[in-house]
Length: 163
Image (cartoon, rainbow, N blue to C red; front, top):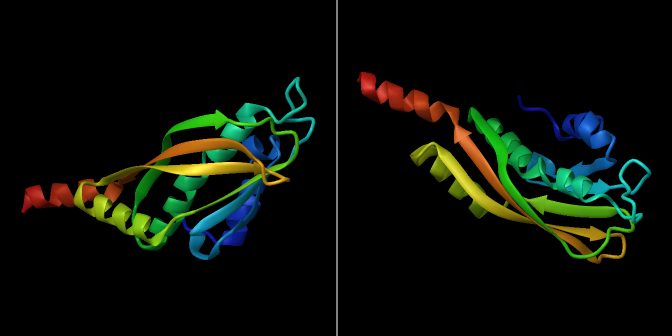
């Protein structure tokens, strides 16, 4: 289901798994081509060292690339499933302050994605996410492999068999 950037921002910010870890969407770019996310350090996500728990950082990186691709492509008429197939994270510095990151989908990535969805019915690619503290120090580097499946592709293949 396609929704506006503002409605999805509101829904995500109150989604319990993100809400209680203090993960907030600052804004979605127009057309869902990007998102800015903030992780607020609080008692709910501090570890015993006083820095932000690594699981919170991982949870913040997990949903956003699949979400962006989903929203962009359903607006173009695709029926699909999207998810993060795998993530790897490297913690570089302790997250002693609030964190933030911004990600976006480039035109070339979107063209590649649509070509793959139309040709083979699925798309898989790894995207980087760099997470910074309030002093712009890189605290974590994430690689997110996105997987998309075009649900209309199987229907098109079935129709070819009938003809």
